[in-house]
Length: 269
Image (cartoon, rainbow, N blue to C red; front, side):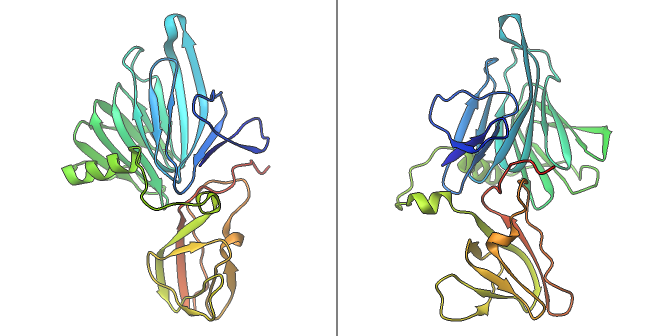
């Protein structure tokens, strides 16, 4: 299931061949993948649990791209950027990085406050949002990780297995398991870091039990330590689409989580 937020109104489910407009925010949920084709023949493909805003888009005569700028607030995309326009006119932002694409086929992800960029074809210039003038070029076959509030890390060559995994995340697939509508649209999260004693009470369970690293949590589940308890629904800050990070207290355990479905995306002023 994928939907769009337009003009600050309610989220609307997307259907094949629906138009996409400037300032639209598009998100996929846990079991959905979509693709957007721009008029200059560039394309963005979404993995599940991804949220993107179309911030700028302008054409000149003959559908030549003057500028395109998209904002990936969480998840993973593949950007196949057409060469019909000048270089440096397709820009991908994340909360902590900016990349200027130069006729490339690249994969960009943003999870747990880190941006990952893998270049299958072409070139992308990448910088931290904190130091946008200090750019590095990532070429075909290479990847880089940009930590939160830091400069891009070491540029490395990626393994074939890594690229295959990214392609699998993006490529359309038929699921053998039947997924109900309620399952497809629900908000989920994954416990991505934990120290100390953290407990979980699963919705419908008989009792509390110890939480596990990489365990899925869903709306209605409750996480707790001795100091406080939070439900998964309470962890969603209205108006944002970002990796969850929750500290449950210094005495008995710290917990961090990343959302595996986008959060609500209505701006909070």
